[in-house]
Structures are given as C-alpha cells and as structure tokens.
Length: 296
Image 1 (cartoon, rainbow, N blue to C red):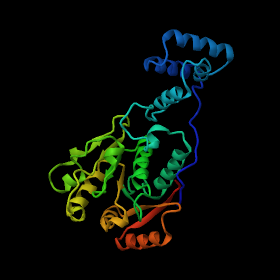
Image 2 (image 1 turned 90 degrees about the vertical axis):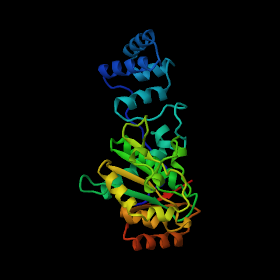
Image 3 (image 1 turned 90 degrees about the horizontal axis):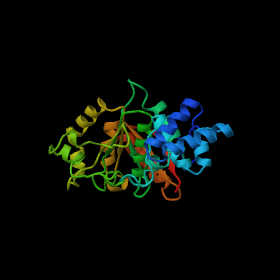
Image 4 (image 1 turned 60 degrees about the vertical axis):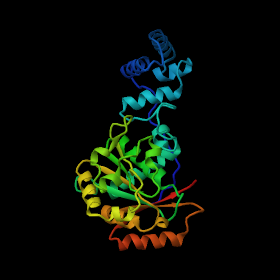
C-alpha cells in the first residue's frame, strides 16, 4: 500500500431539501454568521432563483463558501476547525482543510488501514508510524491520521511515543508536563490523556517530560501494559515513533503494536534505509502494514 500525501474530493454541496435549507439557515444564524433578516432574504432569493440555501447565501455575499462548508460539517457530524479559532497547528491540515487534495489522500490511506489492520472487534487497535530518518514527516502523518480516524467516529488516541524529540503537544497546543514518560515512570496515570475539544472522538497522550533514559522507559513492562489497557478504551491508537536514526526505540514500540506504517520522503529517504528498517521491524516480530510516500 503506497500513498502520496496529496489528491482530493469535496463533500456534498449545501442543503438539498427545504428542511435541510432551514437547518443550515438556523445554524448560520446560531453561529452569528447571518441575522434573521438575512435568513429571510436568502430564503426568498433561493425560491426565486430555484437555488439551494447555501448557494443563495454565497451568491448574496452574506457568507463565504467556507462558512457553508463549516455548517455542513456539523450537520454530517464531520468536525473541523474554523480558520484562526484554535491552538491546533496549521500543519494538522485534516483539522483545518478537510476538503483539500492532501486530506483526500489521508482518507484513502485511512480506508486501506481499516481494511488491512483495524478490522472490527477482532482487529488490531494500535499502529506505529515509523521512518528511517528525521524530518521525513512522521509526526505530521501521525497527527493527521488521528484526526481523519476521529472524523470517521472512531474513538481515536494519538500517542507521542517519541520521547527524544516530541512534537504532538506543539501540534495540538497542549501542555506536556504529564504524558507517556511520566506514566512509564509511575508518576502519572492515564488521566494524562487530553481530549481535543473540537473533535469528539480524538484524544492525545503527549510524550511528557523528556527523560534521560527513553529506551529503558519504553522497554519496561509498563509500556506493554499501558498499550493493552488503552486498547480496551479506544478503537484506533496511532503512535508517533522516533526515527530509526535516533536508535532502537522504534523496535520496542513496534514489538508492542505488532504493526508499523513505514513512511519515506521523496528525494530524501534512501531505499537501502527503508530496506534496513524493514528487516529491523521483522526482527521485532512485527509487520509492515503499509508504506507511505510523503511528497513535499
């Protein structure tokens, strides 16, 4: 399985029935985008021109197409963030621009993973995102995958298992005092997991304080116990892992998840590095569920 992080599609256009039009109008009023007088004006214009409510509102320049897409997302239980209204980084493109070509590729990858790995009640729960080197987009992919799984309604947990150079707390605007490292050091419990308010089914376990002994922490029995406990609470667990260039941490992680998503970056990652990593994953008694070509 190989995916480039680009390509796309858009959800259905604004409201297809009178009742849907009224629902969209009410949501635009409730959100403060339009007034009641605006709503009546839009309804009259929509009837006269045989247009849908959202199209009429955009035609009258009372709202933007982004405003209409935002309320449509709420109607279809497909949350994403309005521009400038969250601490979530713009790198988490699935949270901000769910109709982009890049996010369509992420949804295609999600479908493949649902078929090949997260296959219902008897399927696996955890998957590690790995790559041979640094700056190949591993944290970016893990964060965005977690968002698109949560948008599907899956109870999703993103774990920052990179205890050497963690990034997920920055990507989601979280405090990282307590996290995986403090849980493994028995200084915190799973209450360190933080919900992402804008996404009903998305939670993040930050890396926590950077420890002097990351590999030793991950090799403790507590790590496997934590993964097993989390698997009873979440449908999908995505682990952001350190690169192979950072040491053998990733092998310990994939040994517990049993599966890895191998990421390579176009014109940067060497084939021999991927081949060597594949051998190390096999040595950890895990399998490569799929590969992703990051094209940026």
